[in-house]
Length: 188
Image (cartoon, rainbow, N blue to C red; front, side):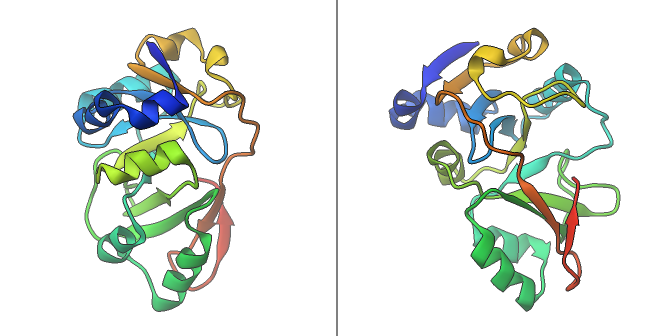
């Protein structure tokens, strides 16, 4: 695991390439540290599932490139488009119905959890145009990690890059289920 300071990561062409290539990252978000990779890298996604001890039926949330991506790739109502426009970027996850099956991100019911974090490193991820699976850095059912120094050994073994932005002590993202026009606060 290569630890890289946030400022260095933001300037690095190697980091951009590694994101596109499907390397596994621990990175800061607007809530806490996340772990993820380009969704196209099935091998990396499988490693994350295994290292976290996560149920393979539980989908990952996805950092998407833009609000336009949401409009094109989900079944979202006009009312909920306005809601998303207010929420993002921000510390939220919205659950919508996906138009297509996306491996590791879409549940059996066809739902997808979407994030657009308000964070410099997440902006870099989004600028690559890839869909990036995201979940908290922790073993399943355990407390999230607020510092790269606290990454569990089991997870360290699979990480290619850890982007260090110091201590982050935010709560997990708030989850809104907006698959219908009835707003529900949910758990994803």
